[in-house]
Image (cartoon, rainbow, N blue to C red; front, side, top):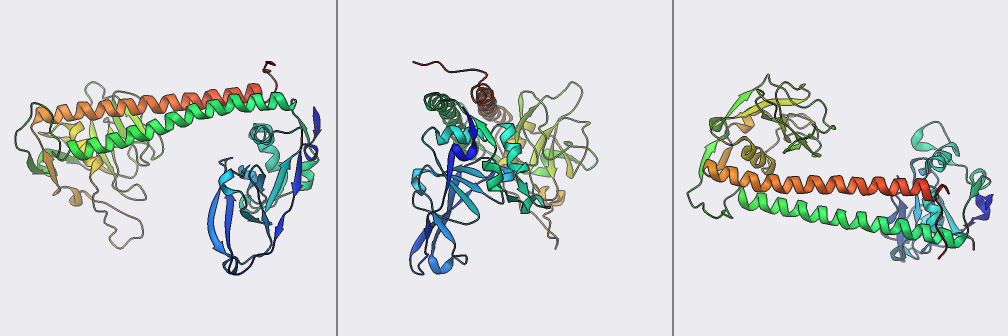
Length: 370
């Protein structure tokens, strides 16, 4: 059916008079259709603006000043009875509307753009939503039973993504534990029992200030068998090509100061300290060790964090024999490979959900009656 948005959902107001000594749960809506969350609990006397409204579980909220950025969502059961200011629109579904389906429809490109077009203002952060104009726009929805089936299909896909994301967190925590245990000698691998040694970084590596690093802080560094972290801490992989000596690069300033990346030679240099090449140490072992250690960041009076090679060169590296280094690297590289595969799988599931939304929410593919 095609009807005006005002015939699918209803704008409601449940005004509340805030009392000074009563505690109230405040909520906010995250951008990017990321849902409704708590802003905290405050007493009435701590809330400056007194024009507030009660929300209930299942309400659809729109942040009037942030909707151009996708700030809308459904109130969860945990926030039933919370309050919002008059900066929000509160809607309830009409009898032919599944509110979860409505929320999914709003995430389609056309309706995302409509939120922007229905917002007035000069500055992108100070737009104000024209609620009444938006509610006059037409919206086509299937009958309620089909809405409910589509919601069930997409909810199942969400659960698949959620489970894999939880597994990813577990894998990352396991790797962190392995690094803490294996790179300190707290846990020894079978067949190794020799004493570990300490050596200065400058004695087990070669430093070059002129060598290069990754092109940008944000981009991944390619694909291959070895783990790489760029300046933002994103995970990627890179190959070491024949006749090119790999090295470790350190970000010298800014928010990413002190982060290390594993790189191949002849890349472009931006914002890096230089390159550390392996000498009498397994490079990958050194990379993992440097990734796990929190180096002190020196600002030298600047408001921007800086690090210098002189801050690193005298750091004591904890070293087992070369064979044990290689064995530790094999374990950590395997963990990185598993994490990488899982991240790719999660991205594939997200793309699958996106494709399902485009097909099911537009009517290109219809669900069958049971």
